Image (cartoon, rainbow, N blue to C red; front, side, top):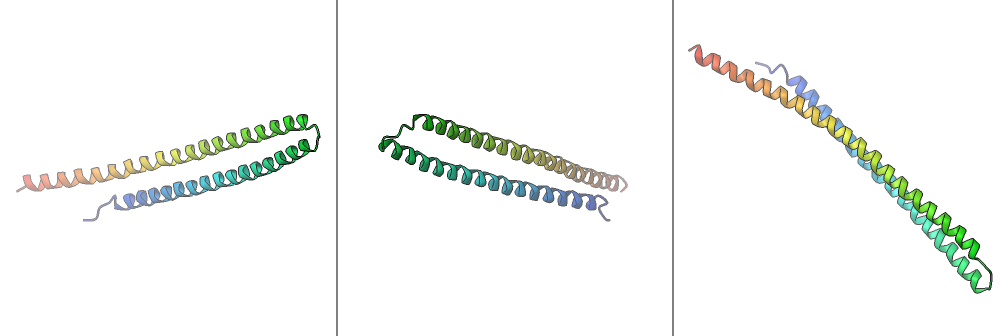
Length: 134
């Protein structure tokens, strides 16, 4: 006797695997975005440090750089704020996407498990019928 829900269980299993692959892809994209942001942040820090050295050198030569330094610090703080905000948005966005897919996977598991329960109950019922028909 062929299990009539076997095809449906196989289809659900495949859909679960597909969704799990989507989560893996989201995780790769997340790491890529975080790495790009980190490279940007590192490069900006390198440039800020070089600029800071130029201000220090100019001060040693007697130049008044206080107004430039205050503008420079404001720009540096704004870049830090933007990087922090972007990092949080990336984290939230990818986290929400992972959560939505995981919720879908959990639902698919429930559907597949329900099919197994139906089959189990049908088999139990058949065995009882056979037992009582003796």
